Image (cartoon, rainbow, N blue to C red; front, side, top):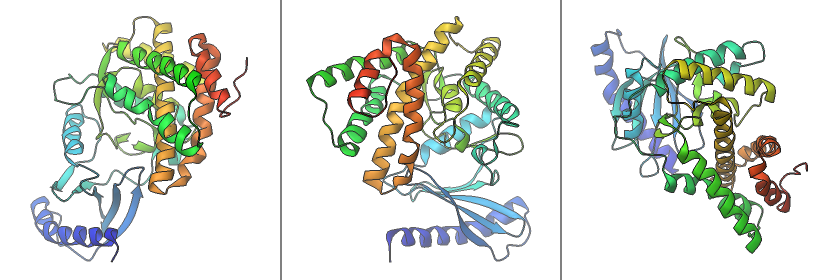
Length: 340
């Protein structure tokens, strides 16, 4: 029997143990026959199932140890709930075996429903949730987005995309360029004011729900650069918006953040530059991650969105002279053609 089937059987046995008592304690009535169907999977080893019994719908997370650890999810969920952010309620947990039972925030993500007609309102709701998140005091022990983490992330690009996917090695000149570029990006991130950072605040992880949005995939939260999450929201892995519109949304966020007392940069131009460089760091990281998911995990579909990230990077290079070297490096790798 495949390992994943063993996991599924263990999960079903766990549900059989906990659900009768859960129904009694919550006053949900009699437990009737139910269905368990795949709800979604993501770029990690986690899987999600939807357990349905009549009108009652719950979500089960399968996070197999040692690849995944449920504890950060539980910890950050409790933290975000304090700010009235709509995150899954943890109804039952078996941390040792990597099982969580959650309430169901719905079946439609922002990615499923967003379009040019409703984007303004959906993003308005998302920004309100983000502002609440960023106003949380940095008291709960969480990792810091420090130099070591930033460097590990950005090095995914040469390790997995350049070496593994392109089959290339940096020559001496390219390696020197890369070191200067990556240090510039890291230094910019470290210089930013710090807040709680979701780290994947994008339409695929926001549920169209009431209250809107439901927020998912927050288990990797850290304390770090204030521009990170808002940049992730508008420069998404799976859909793009006109650059003029993105710049307008970023300006609106900056104004709201300052009004809310969030320690965003005092100067708009400084914020926009920080957002640009933060975005490039994230885009290079995600390109590396998508290559790793393809070659290590056998999930090639993510590579289809790599050109989107190169397009984001190209746009930023065109307006940030300090990134000219990155343009030269990418051109030498034949990844994008950056205009002079």
